[in-house]
Image (cartoon, rainbow, N blue to C red; front, side, top):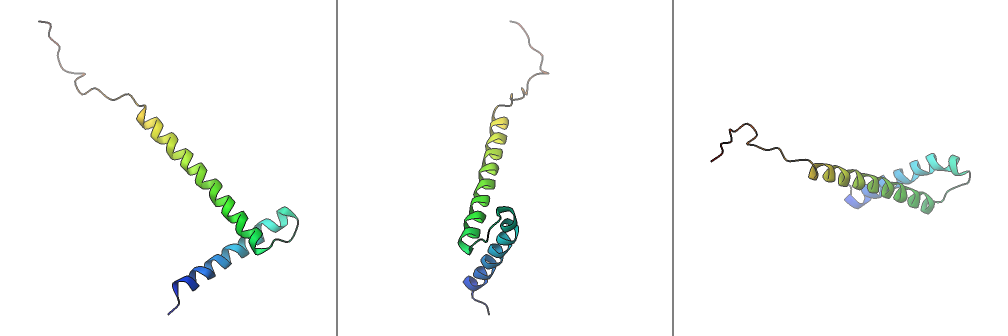
Length: 79
């Protein structure tokens, strides 16, 4: 049976290789594994911030909705 951390190391290695494959041509120089790791971490962090902002915006919109009045159709009588 594979050790769990060994499986994770393999996934990380694949992610680093894929990051290098995508970013090296765009950057125009060879990337080290550490360069690729930092790029992947920064891109992940960037999208995490965007997701956080999106969730915060949705919460704010939902919090600012005018509550519906349940008694809009009830008859009102003056005394």
